[in-house]
Structures are given as C-alpha cells and as structure tokens.
Image 1 (cartoon, rainbow, N blue to C red):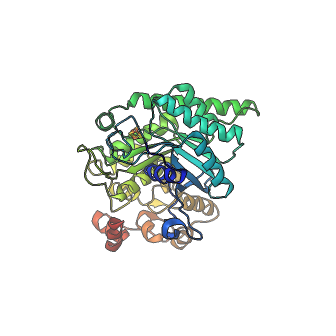
Image 2: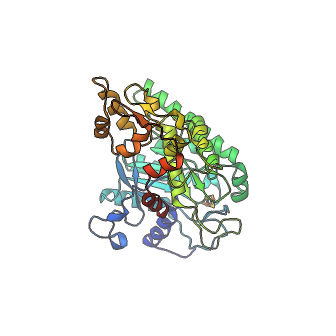
Image 3: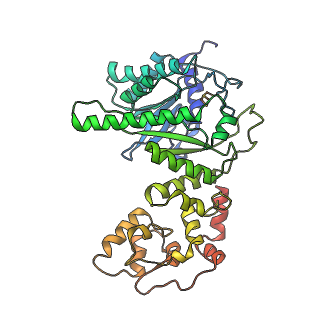
Length: 413
Ligand code: SF4
C-alpha cells in the first residue's frame, strides 16, 4: 500500500464509508456550498448527519478504519477483487482525527466501520481499541456508533457495547439464498447469532443499570442493521417480513434500507441498474407503519402487488384503497388503532383528534384544523356533517387523492 498522509487517507476512507446507510443523512445537502467547504456548509469530508436517539440531528465523522478487505462480497466496492485505491488508518490516527474534529466543533461523534483485515478478530480489536482510547484515555463524551463484525469473538463484540452508544451488525440481504449468492463468505446464522448475543448484552446492561447506579452504560442507543435493496431478487414483501422479524427477535432500534448502487468493475451476478430510489423510500414508509401505526407485516404485504410496494402511492394509502370496506372511519368514535389507518392522519394528528373529541363532536372544519391536508383524509372518514358517500371506484379515488402531476413527480423522485 503506497504511503499516504492522513488527509489522503481521509478522502479515501470517508468516500468508502458513504455506502453505509445506517448512519442516515438528515437530507441537508441543499444548504451545502460548492465543494462542501463554504460558510454554513453541512457536508465536509467524512462528515455526515444522523439523528441521535433523542431525535436531535447530530454531525458525525463517518469513516472506515480501512477499505481493504479479505472478503469478496459481490455488491461491495471494497471487496478483495475490487480495483479501488486502498488506505488504512492506524488506531491513533482515528482517535486524533475524532478529537480534533470534535474540539473544532465540526462533529458531535464518530461512526466507524471497516473492511476486514487479517481476520475478523484482529479488525474488531482495532475498532474496540479506538473506542476504548476515546472513552478511557481522552474522556470523550461524544456519540460513538460502531459497525461490528459478526464473525468476531463474542467477547470483542460485547466490549464494543461498553464504549459505543450504538452498535450495528449488517444483515446485508433479506434472504439466505441472496446472502449465499452475493456474499458467500458470510453466514446468516452467525450474523443472527451475533445479533442475539448483542440483544442479551444490551438487556443485561439495562438491568444492571436499574439495580446499580454505578453500572456502566451499555450501548444505550441499542443496535441497528442494514439491508441492501435491489441487488438480488428479493421482493419488498421478503424485505418487510425480514425487517419485522429482526425488530421482534433482536429488538433492533432501526433497520436501514440501502438501495443497491452499481459499482465500478461490478461482478456479472449483479444487476446493471440500481432500483428506483422511491423503492427505498416506500420501504422506510412501510417500516414506519409497522413501528408506529400498528400494522402487521402481513398487512403491509397484503397491500402489495406481486410482493412489490406500489411506487406511485404510499403503502398506507395502498392498504386503504385495497381494503375500502374498513372505511369510512368515524372520527368521533373510532379507536386510536383505526384512526391511525386513515391515509393522511399521522400520530400527532390522531393524538390531537383524540384530545379534542373529548370535549365536543368534531366537524370536517375541525379535522382540517388539526391535520395538514384534509383532501387526502376526506374520502376515508365520517364526522358531524360529513360522510364520503359511496366512493368505491378505486381508480377514481386514487386520482382524486393523488393528482396525476403529483404521481409523475413521485416517479421522477
Ligand atoms: S466484508 Fe464488508 S467490507 Fe468486506 S467485502 Fe464484504 S461488505 Fe465489503
């Protein structure tokens, strides 16, 4: 490997880290100035924006320890057979970069991932050592998100949670077949075993903290994972079912969906084109429905055509159009669970409706004041002085709620 200075390494290893979605961008790129260097710029080299568990948007130094790897996952730009320029930080370099950026107020934390060098254990030891030095030697109080390596020794995995706020283990692909085909050196059983071990360690840490005030915090922001979308033949239904099982079995805080993007010198087993970005967006919406709106995965899947979520309308509207006989929902009497099924009604609006209707029966004007757009809601609700009548023609209703122009814009997005 050619000798590179820290700045050159940072350019390579920050760029290589951009493929990781599990430290999600806050979508502030519009305010960025050319080259990401101007006044008020939100995107410096290696700096990304993510949401902390308390909902704050924080900036993180997002880098790889190295983009060299002994594995050869087909979809990955850093795979062994890839022809990319390689670089590798030392433990001290990552520690110093993090501290320098932190002291200058560029970042509030570190997101660290890595290719596998020498062995899973060796790489994991380096990752843990960086976090240990930051916490124990430099008393670093910022946020740390460590991407861990499922094949590493369980003791090393446990140590990661002692220093990190959040740990993540990538599930990579939604099906066992997909994993075998595209990441033959990875083992689905070992990945899930590591997630199970992390879940137990997080729960033990939480119990210890309840009993003893002095017990150390253990991965207080929980664990997350990431699935690649569109690199294999898995349908949205497969992805939704897999995500739901990961939430249930391993208490994931988040499952991230990352649309596959073609890479240079790609293997012939990969598709030539990335899936529409809207597909990734619809999967995030379905994830939201399961976590906050009480939808079961089979219900989200029931609203799909051939297992694929429609791209032109969101999955909640798709469900409502398919199950028209569940509507209209009586705004003044329906339980919370049914109000949450109404397209266009979010959790906040439902909360506002429930509080207001305690004092009086609501009319359509009242609902309009409590929601963002009554146009989308109207066909699915009844209230004092309003009933949608027999609006049963699916195509007409869709056109009424999502005008043609808006549907086209969604496709463009
Ligand atoms: S192990 Fe990780 S870094 Fe290495 S090739 Fe596979 S996905 Fe890429």
